[in-house]
Image 1 (cartoon, rainbow, N blue to C red):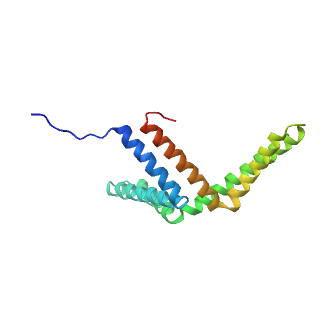
Image 2: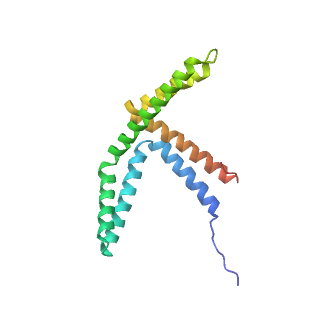
Image 3: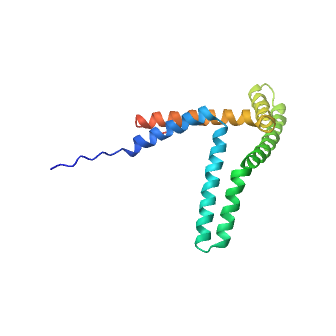
Length: 155
């Protein structure tokens, strides 16, 4: 008597998961970040409640506070981080621009410095647009990785 077992190859499952997540990132773009923040926040709340039931008051309160902050204030943190990154990228771009201006007959460093400054400004003033493009690019990377995993290659 032979038993028929239905098994799913982990590589196939992983490839399909990459493609699905990539498609979700491309479709929902920046709103996917809101979902991720909410899910992580819920996980922290659950962890906090579990800690409290085990009489770990400090761990429970920390988990609850972090979870609630992520659920209700996650976008504030994302916005703050994007502003900080934007300022840092602008500073790097300005430094690169100053170095590029010292070079003669080399236009590429000048163009790259200006693009770096533009990316920094976009991170500060057009956060939703920047996040949308980031998630589209991330989604494409996930989809490509999933397709390559289907044919047995990894990036």
